[in-house]
Structures are given as C-alpha cells and as structure tokens.
Amino acid sequence: MSPGLSFSSRSRGGLGPVAAAAVFGLCYAAAFPKWDYTFLLPLALPFLYWAIKDVTPGRALRLGFFAGLVANAGLLYWIVYVTHVFGRLPIPLAVGVMLLLAAYLALYRALWAWGVVRAGAAGISPLWFGPALWVALEYVQTYLLSGFPWGLLGSGLYRFPLFIQVADLAGVYGVSFLLALAGTWLFLTGFPRFQAVRHERRREALALTLLMLWVGYGAYRLDAVGKQAAAAPRIAVGVAQGNIQQGEKWNPKMVAATLDRYAELTRRLKGARLIIWPETAAPFLFLRHPEFTPRVQEIGRHSGAYLFFGAPAYELTPAGERFFNRAYLLDPEGQVAGYYDKAHLVPFGEYVPLQRILFFVPKMVPMVGDMAEGPVGALLHLPEAPVGPLICFESIFAYLSRAQVINGARLLVTITNDAWFGETSAPYQHLAWGVFRAVEGRVALARAANTGISAFVGPEGRIWWTSALNTTAAHSLELPLMPGGSLYSRVGDIFAWLCLAGVCLAPLLRRRRR
Image (cartoon, rainbow, N blue to C red):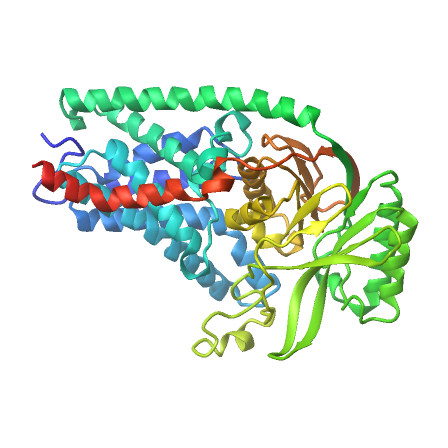
C-alpha cells in the first residue's frame, strides 16, 4: 500500500467528489470575515482530500479548481460591488471580473490537488507533502504577477492570538502550514485505510506532537510579549474616522466640509502625541492648493500633535509627470516633517500592468489611475521613535512591514479608504490581514480607515479596539513602542522557501530511496 492516498486505475465518478469540493469551498469562505466561522478552517481540508481520493491526477486538477473557485468567489464577491458601483460596469461584466480573479486564484488549489495525487501515486505521504505544497503555492500567489495574498489559510485565525504567535518565526505561512497539517491529520485519522503501516503512524505521532507544540509556543509567546509590551515606553496615538462616502469624497464642493469634520474629530483627540487621518483624507494636492493646505496646517497646529494623513501628490521629475498616493507627517507647528509614498500599488486600480498590451483598460474602467511607486521600507520619524507607514493594500504584504521593522520601525501605522467596499466583507477581511503584520514584526499597529474599520492592534496580535463600520469615530490609546524584530524579521520567508524546495525535492528523494 502506498503511504499516501489510495488510487484506482480509473477516475472515481459520481457527484460525491464534486459535492465534497464544493463543501470545502463553502467552508473555506465561511471561515473568513465577516462570517468568521473559524472552526471550519481545519475541517475544510479533509473534504478536499476526500474529493480527490481514488481519482486520477487530471480529475484532481479539475476538482481542485472547482473547490478553489467556490472558495474564492465566496471570499471575493465584494469585487462585484466595487466594479459595478464605482467602476460602472454592468452587473454581468462585474461578475465576470470577479470570477476571472477567483479562477486565477483557483489555479493554486487545482495545482495543490494535482500535486498531492501525483505525489501519492509515487508513494509520497500527504501528511507532510500536502501542507508543504499548500505553503509553497501560497508563497507563489503572494508574489507572482504583482501578488495577491488575500485569503491565505493561516490569516483566517486572526481572532485567535494563541494560534498566530508562530508568525514571528515563519510568518503567516507557518500558521498556514500548521492548519494544513491539522486538516491532513484529521483526514488520515478519519480514513485509516488511506494510511500506511508503522512508519506512517510514527509520522502521525510526530505531526500531533508538532501541533501540541504549536499551542504551547503560542501560550509562551503571549505571556512573554505581553510582559515586554507592559514594560515598553508608550506613545498616545489617536485615529480619526471621518466616514466620508466615496461618492462625496472627490467632490470639490465637499472638501471644506471634509476638513471641518476632521478638525472636529481631531479636537476630540486632545492629548494624543500622534493623530492619524485615513488615506486621502485630504482629497486635494497638498502643498499645491492655496486654500486648503493652510487649513490642514492650522488643524495640525491647534492639535499640538504630530498629524499623519493621506493626500494625492504630483511631481514633475526628469521622467515626466508623476502622481503618488502619499502620506504626509506634519509636526506640531504644522510644517511637513516627512512623507511616505505608497510602495506597492493596486494593479488596475492605481496603475495598469502591461499597459502596452492592456492599453484599452483605462478607457474601460474609469477609476483606474496611473501612479508611481515609492521606496520599500521607508520610515517617518517622530522624536520618540521611527514609524512604519502602510497605505491601504500594502497591509496584506508582509515584505513591506518587515523591511520597515528591519529599518527600525517601532510602530506600524496603516491608513486606508475602504469606502470602496460598502458593507461587504472586504473591510473586515482587510483588517484581519493587518493583525499578522503586528505579530510578524512584534510591534503595535494603529489603523485609520475612512469609513472603518479603524483599529489598534497589540504586538501579540490582540485587537485592542475597533470602530464600527460607516460611522464617524475618534479614539486614542497609549501604544507600546516595542523594539521590534523577530526571527521572521531577520530571515524573512525562508520557511516558505524550504517548503518550496521540499516539494521540488520530494519526488527525487523518493526515487533515490527506491
């Protein structure tokens, strides 16, 4: 008997495998915000294993693709809202755009299913190969074609600090690996006929030991980081959530009213050393507008604090006209103390990739811009400590915050405008990914969102406060200025690279052993 899944000479037919693949997709989507049925995460993978047992690699590829399509359509349904309401695409075309992205991401689940079945046919156990392949494909998904690490398996545990502490060793990929290992172990335990003989049981004992160590490490790090945070110097940080609807945000007649609202919210944050407004809270070219620039500077002076806010920027460079999605830092005198330009832009939102080929896209989707990127790892400096800014989409990319922590950031600040998403699940999902940035770098995170969800997150991954969606809010909290740094900060994605190497070498090692 092979040490992996059982195989037959012909593909297993019927609707059972298709139904199991669909159940996996539904469970996967329901485990993430805003439904948050997190207990389904380790239970979803056994359904996908059951779907691909006793099937040919080709059928496994199709079943994996279908499972991924269901999962990603459930996660990304909000794209229909964005492209229809703000991109002004007809509903059928908006659904098509969403399904196109969901289909692309489903390819990774298809490759996983195909790879597990092929490896099983070669006598490679899924117990370790399945989780390693899952992580390897998540890593490729993070960086290929600009990258879109939305909905990685481990990120679904964002509400459970005990289980995400391992992210300071291996990033979110370490959490994904352990969740996939738990799901694989559950499947093999439930279907003993797909197990091998004694040596496989020893591997299962090792897997169970690792899962118990996962929990033990989480408890240990929660206590240790909590004590470190309690002893760290602190800074009073305030966030202002203006709740400016997207349809009003860029209306020139609304700019004065927008600044009046942020002035009022800023007054509520008296005593804060750093006050944060959201992305493009100042909806004009700051420093180039003679009427509104002094108004923002006046608000900053009256607050007596450092003011951090987003605004579009324009510069004439030797390469030509360049626009930036920028965040400015004003000192207590209202003068510019520094600025940060978004380093990872949203494809088809802030720039068009392969523009020579996709020249028609800006005409088809009016909201698409053409912006320039800033440097990776840039910081803004307060007298107390350096701060690592992240603008919107950047909070889902670990390499950006990691570079900032390496450069000395002792606090992460995220500003975003999630008004695009309405009341869909996207604002909740967007917040979830940011929790991992705090744990990976072992620094606190402050988040200001235009319509929500604004939040404060501790260096151990606990969400200390969140605002309600689609409300105005102003809240301040004293955050620890942690020294930052972790094994993950120093070595980066080496664990994901090891998984990728292991997946590539496993067939060669198996052949050599034979």
